[in-house]
Image (cartoon, rainbow, N blue to C red; front, side):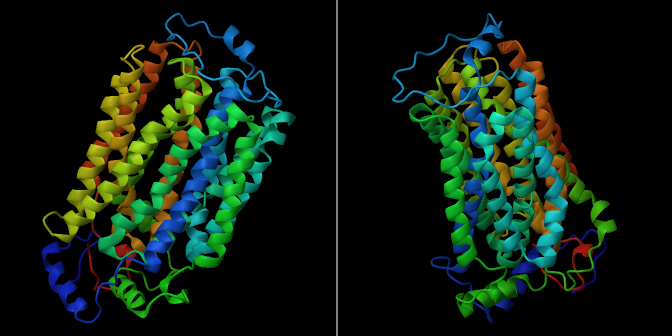
Length: 493
């Protein structure tokens, strides 16, 4: 084989010969009952917890506000008629309510990301240095503890609640970089899309389940129980994670020898031989990495805008009750979860058949998963009070976003598997900015809660989405970069 330059463009048609040679030594380990798929399921549960704790405040916020105060501040003449609540609450609410204006609400909803952004790059570095298992475990455990303290913080004042949300963000900030570091040691190249979409579907399921369940909890109990119940679910996850997860196949005491050899052999020519010598200059000047940064930032602008404000839109514009709100707000993320898993299967199939190069698959899935959502998000702003059409367009928009899970979102592992956690930390640092400023800007633009104001919010998100997709399509790569390895011989996929 030959030595390649700084941007490694390997003829992937040579790969089957290499792969066939390896398969003579080590057969592919079956998926059923395997340790790598068990890791995918447990990590999926972990991301379920992460997103449940992240989004439950969005639903609780609707019930935490003083309704009398809110009705006096709503001057919109174009807001849709409110739907009558079909049921009567079973219990009287004893939890406190607060007179927070829309600007304060925006800061509370966005405060999580001010902590989240701080631990992205450190999370990737620490995971590579000390191992991802306990970093992710204690990160989520810390978030669970502060979630349980949320009702106390809210009673003390908006400032205390903001502080608690910042601390939750600090804990959650290490989770994605840690998990990418874990997958760099666990995911065979041609199973990346499958394993990672199973793993990260937990994030979508956390949103899908926590939104309606939070609405039901608030309806029958009160908003404080949202944080207590989901906090308890997080404690159960930590116990399972502590006992059943290990940093790598070589440290797992119960993995089969066939699976261990299959994983390590498939990765031996992609992983760096020096974990301590991090090529920071090459990383920060890498154009393929910049392409992922721009795409990740752009996608998250739309994602976080809807994640934090969709319950508010459902309530203030479409007029749904707290019960209806949770279920309808969850529909877009249910569609996203289903599409993400399907796209992972299709992406790996296209790569396994060798009909399409990795870079083509990643770019195609990114374009569909970003431009599609932009179109339907804008369309949702022009449905007026057609509730069915509005929810349908928002659901299609978010569902198509699931396609990008097999696009730029996995590309870190394609270009530098050895430093995937660090790369994810870098891209997620920039991608967290929309979560910090998006809700604040959106609430500042929608103080009167008119449909016209929300149309502006949707236009901004769509324009950023389209720009990110085009930038990635031009500058993205699908092969391992030379600075990511310390050997001339490796398998570029």
